[in-house]
Image (cartoon, rainbow, N blue to C red; front, side, top):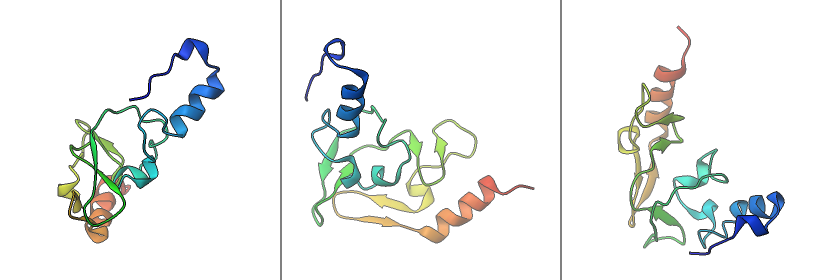
Length: 112
């Protein structure tokens, strides 16, 4: 883990360090679920990540409390886990059931 003394850095340096993933030692755009998350460049989670076997990408070893495919936080009304949305992300596979996610989002976000 890279440590940074924020009192010795300018705000621009800190934003650059976070956006450049200097804290994590990897490119967040190469993390399967995170690469599609709107919060990926400002996320400060400490979720452990591992390299996938079949690809040059990484996967989260535990699920984040935010699901970017339905824009819901754990505990929020309508929240569903990745698996409930048809998303598989592990060392062997990364797949998304786009039809299932579209159906869930239509139910969650359609105006009645």
